[in-house]
Length: 61
Image 1: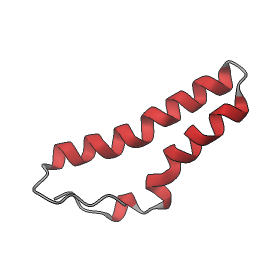
Image 2 (image 1 turned 180 degrees about the vertical axis):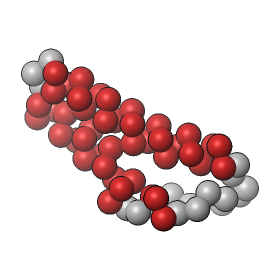
Image 3 (image 1 turned 90 degrees about the vertical axis):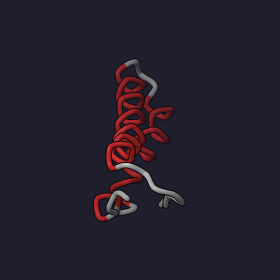
Image 4 (image 1 turned 45 degrees about the vertical axis):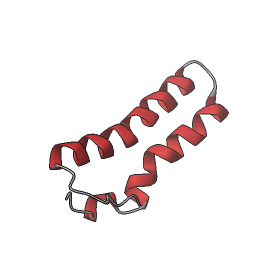
């Protein structure tokens, strides 16, 4: 899990977590919709990484 070195606002931390999980999810769903399921798997795994890594338990600095 990425830990910021300096002060990071709560808004920036939320944007980083959301964009880091939702953007790969949307790309993966799109690839599945156009029939490229195997290529979608890495994007779907990346979209789950904050959940697996416990990002919900990490407090924004």
